[in-house]
Amino acid sequence: MSRKKVVLAYSGGLDTSVILKWLIEEKGYDVVAYAADLGQGSEVNEIKKKAKATGAIKTVILDQKEEFVRDFVFPAIRMNAIYEGIYLMGTSLARPCIARGMIEVAKREGAEAVSHGATGKGNDQVRFEVSCYALKPDIEVIAPWREWDFKGREDLLAYAKKHGIPVPKYGGKPYSSDRNLFHISFESGILEDPWAEPPENIYQMSVSPEKAPNKATYIEITFKNGNPIAVNGQKLSPAKLLTKLNEIGGKNGVGRSDCVENRYVGMKSRGVYETPGGTIMHIAHRALETITLDREVMHLRDQLIPRYAEMCYYGYWYTPEREMIQTACDDIQKWVNGVVRLKLYKGNCAVVGRKSPNSLYRPDIVTMGADKGAYNQADATGFIKLNSLRLRIRGMVSRPKF
Image (cartoon, rainbow, N blue to C red):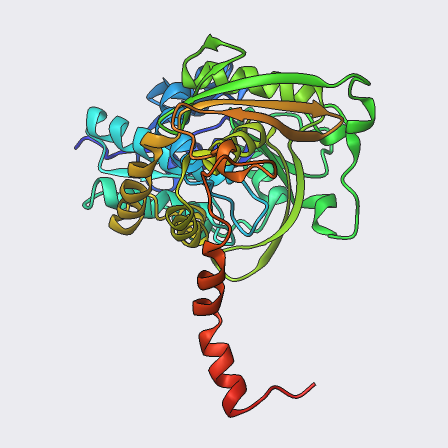
């Protein structure tokens, strides 16, 4: 009888290397190692060799950089989505993209199951599995960290040594990290103390603000239908545009954040993030909306941002409610066209100019000078009286006490 196939989301690190061998030895599967190239850099270069040495029957590496930025990052930017006011969700947005690739490979390879290296304590297990079930309802999902008896890294290293599994040399790195084109996240180890300042040597995408140039950098970002399409007049694909903004923002120390966030499973977690390009895009997009969107439309959409961000963070990307909010809010993005000028200086990203062919900003109305009849100030008298009517009536019945 032929063995069943499983597609493993494989990074080449300790956890997924041990999982690969464990799926073969303990579960009796043939393993197809799948890696999503989301812009993590040189990490993908050795994956095929590592996977083959550990026993994978096949390794599939999908270049999903453009797909990741176009289909996951840009929709979140159009929504101005930030989780709990600080986190731009680089990891959260990557997981449904990886899950989509994993299911694509499973269908292509005829695999009955998929597997991942997320632990039973975090958000990623939900993000991966809910996404997989949404995309292929009959798929079997294997989550080793919820099945095996290993308790931590020491157990994994012992298993790797026993089975001759090539694992990376960590050199005692006292934290874990996850990288893609949108951000790098750092957590655990020395960062588990929320009082401890992150050491400067952990950062990879940005210089410290103190070491950033002493002269400000000015850039212009062009938007069409809410999506950034050009930097300083140069049109770029989504992934190349984000790469460019990462480079510019990183040189100026932009995009670092340190937060304690509420995980979906119920615990609080401290995360340190670098999101230089994403920070710039978010600030620029918000600025352009201020002159192109109607007040009530913007305020109504803004009420949906926390709910949308929760869906992304919790792992509910492929849900009808997320799609409904996305569709409704993308409809108003047809007005978000124009150019935003920003000033980057020592970790700060300030908006210094914005213009749009769809601008609702009217200098002839808002001017503090002579408005040439565009606005009749006497109209405000009735406006104020009507809006204060209920307060006047309340005062007649029961005057507030001071």
